[in-house]
Structures are given as structure tokens and as C-alpha cells.
Amino acid sequence: MPSRPPVRIANGQGFWGDSILGPIRLLREGPLDYLTLDYLAEVTMSIMQKLKTRDPSKGYATDFVRLIDRVLPELVEKNVRVVANAGGVNPHACKDALLEVIAKHGLQGIKVAVVEGDDIYGDLEAMMEGGETFTNMDTGQPLSGVLDKVTSANVYLGAFPIAEALDQGAQIVVTGRGTDPGLVIGPMIHEFGWGPDDLDKLAAGTVAGHIVECGAQCTGGNFTDWEQVPDMAMIGYPIIEAQADGTFHVTKHAGTGGMVTRSTVAHQLAYEMGDPSAYLTPDVVADFTSFQITDEGQDRVRIDGVRGSIATPTYKVSMSYQDGWKSVGQLTVSGPNALAKAKRCAEIVWERLAYDGFTYSDEQRMVEFVGANVCHEGITIPEAGEPSEIVLRMGVKGPDRAAIDRFGSELVPLVTSGPPGVTGFAGGRPKATEIIGYWPALVKKDRIQPRVSVFTSPSA
Image (tube, rainbow, N blue to C red; front, side):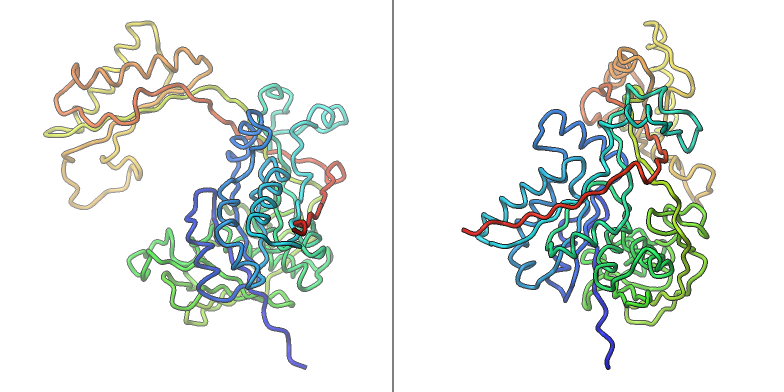
């Protein structure tokens, strides 16, 4: 009896703001079974929470709804199922917007699922009274010290709720916060019937999801040997061809730009890597040192031999909190001795602020001379001459908003009261903006209850 064909799972968004052409081209340039879209990062959740506070109908990735509006007929015609974490902190509002789009297209019977239970922002105090400390994983500090400043709190849920939504027939699955690889593992669990004890297979799905989670970053984007990458303008977004036994290939649609090689895949595998032998997820602990990467040519890389072990009893929680204020501005300084003039400009700013009683510690202030090797300081650039233009970038941070705002008043005057060649002031006078701090913590899994709800677009 012939084995079933591989399941094709593509990822068309690596972050909120990635090219909208990624998912559109994936649908048009070749066959797919699943389209995944990753919109969330740690700071994104805080931004979405703020939007929801201002307007209860907001707090999700609106770009996703616009995308579905544009491609919905093709999704339905080709029977491509979508899994996206676009729900942010308001997945039901995202679902409602999707149902409006579906109705606009006159389509009935389309199932949209919501996966929730990750947002514990409103439950923090009660959970702490029940014994959770939410100790910062980096500093060891308890959350109680900044509890009144927390702006969002979301648990990284696993992949099984996504699989449950697909089991219930959803064509579009909208989640809040979850693991990035979970978007890819969920369809595999659904298709292959993997269970919580299929550790090696779940680990393989984790590796696959990690490879494609940043979109084109594994098909030649952000690649060290970028000059070898063909047709980067039309770079192909990645596709996983998955088998029930956990083996899979990384590829892209034929005829698209970019490239899939052992090297491009290995570059992405090292992305955001802690202990490579113990990559922690809610579903499994994956050993990234256990598998083989085989370049099979023609934009095909095979991964097999992935090993996994039982997951920890905790979920990771991503929290953000208000951590003071910052202000950043920049000027372009050009002409002879541009670097020396830019350095003098920075000194002038600090001197004038000090005259008015505003001083900042070394930890509170920042000065960069963009164009003078600031990005890779300490690395010698052969034949690097004196730059004829410098972008002076200055900033301050601290708890006193008034002191941070005052800084912004002293950059603009340099145009007429500083060295010659100061031009290109862009963005207006710098103003104080909130600093969003990141607070990683753990919570016991039995304190969290993921939920799946499925909604069907009504008949006309």
C-alpha cells in the first residue's frame, strides 16, 4: 500500500510587518495544504494590550484580516487551511472581523476557530495569591515589585489546542500567544494523529517550525553569503513537507527566488538558541544536536533523526511592564571632519542640558556615530577612510518623564548654534516615549486552561 503524500505546511509571515506578498505568493505559486502566519513578538503583545484598552474592538493583527479579505476565494478554492497567531490579546475581535470578511465574500459554512486561555493579564493578582510568584527568569526578582506596572501577560501555549481546532473542521485558526513552532506542529498533530507521548515526532515538528518561523530567513534572507542568493526581490517563502514518521524536507515553490540549502537552514536553526540540546517548548524538549541535515539539491533539505524528551510541568509567561521613559533623536553631520564635528555636537548637548540642571548617568544616555563603525565596533574595516558624513544618534532614558522630554529640546538648535554641516534633522523634536520592559517567568501548567471555540459563517 503506497504511503500517503507529505503534508505541505508553509509559513508566510515571520513577524507583524513582514511582506504581505509572502503569503499571497505562497498561495499562487504552488500547492499547499496549510498556510501559517506568525505575527507576534514580546513587545507586540504590550502594544496590542494598549490598543485594546483604548478600543475594545482592537488588540489583534489587523493586517491578517486584510490579507484574508484579499485571498479568501483562493483559500477556499484550493482548500488551504490557515493557522495564525494574529489574535494577539483579542482573538474574538479578530474572529468577528474575519466573519465579516467571509460574509462580504458571500461564503457560507466557513469555520473559524479561536484558541485562547493564554492571556492571564487580568488574573495575575489572584494567581499570586494562590502561590505563583512569577519570578523573573533573568534576574530572579519576584513580580510583586512591578505588578502595578505590568501591561500584558501571556502564556506560551502549545500546539495541541491548534490541532483540536483543526480536528473540529476549522479552515482558519486564530490564536493568541503560543510558541512560534506550534503553528506548524498543530497541523502535523492533526494530520498524523500524534499524541503527547510521541516525543521524537513532536520534537521533529518543533525543529520544522523553528526553521520556518522567521519566514524567508531560511530561504536566503538575512544570509551571510547574500551575494549568492538569486532573485532576492522574489524570494520564495519556506515550505515544510512533513511525513508521519517525523522526517521532513524544507523547500520552496519552484521558480521562486532565494535558495534552500544546508547552510541557509543551519543559519536559521541557530536563531534565538539557548541550550541546543534542550530546546524547551510546552509540548516537548527538542534536542537540536540529535538530527541530520542533508542537502538534497534543487532547494530541498532533509531533516531526520530528531530526538525529544518529556516537556517541563510549566509554561513560560511573557510579560511586559512600564519601565520608564526614553527619547531618541538624530542629526546628519556632513563635510570635512564630520566625525569630530558630530562628537562636538554631542558634547554641546550634554553641556547645555547640565547648565539647565539636567544631568544623566552613563547608563541613562546613549551616543552613536552611525557611519563610524558603530554597528560593529572593534572590527577593523580595510581601507576605511575618514567618513564625509555621520549620523549623530543620541538618546536618554530614565524614570523622570520631564527630564527625558527636556533632552529633546537641545538637538534642533545645533543646526544654527553648532559646528557647520549639521543638517538632516528628521522626525521632529524627540519626545519621551514609554520603555516597555520584558519579564519572562514560569507558571504551573495546571493553572492554565486553553480553550477552543469554533464559529461557522452563517448561511445567506
